[in-house]
Structures are given as structure tokens and as C-alpha cells.
Length: 84
Image (cartoon, rainbow, N blue to C red; front, side, top):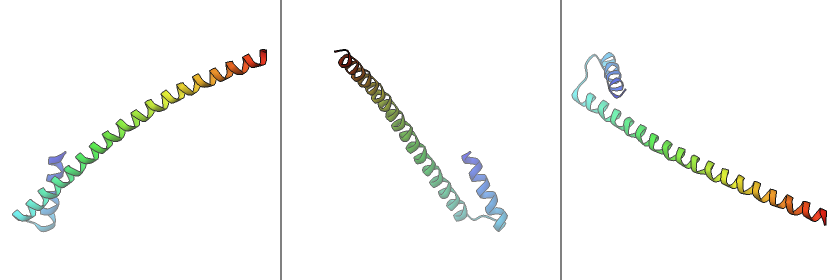
């Protein structure tokens, strides 16, 4: 994928100018490196978000279980009060 980006960028440059100078190639390589760094950062952030979402889901499931338990207990207490 990375080589494909480089090749496409170079092909576009050559098609547009007919010839690429060393500085043009250096600029392309720099742009590609920056894009790769941005993509790596985006992947890292996405992985952190996935981890945070999984933790939140786990916390929500635990809270729902506790709420069910508390509701069942409250129902039992209420039912017992009706029988007295």
C-alpha cells in the first residue's frame, strides 16, 4: 500500500511535469511519510477508543446487573410488606 501511494504520487508528478527533480522526489517521500505517520496515529487513537468502548460496555453490563438485583430485592421487600 505504501509503495502504491509512492508510485502513484511519482506517476502523477511525472505526468504533470514530464520529469521529477530530486527535490520533487524528496517532497513526495516526505508527504508519504507524514501521511503514514498520520495513519499510524489514527490507528492508535482508534484502538484506544475501542478499548475505552469495551470498558464502558463492561461497566454498563455490571451496572445493569446490579440494578436488576436491587430491583428484585425491592420487589421482594414490597411483596413481603403486602403480606403483613
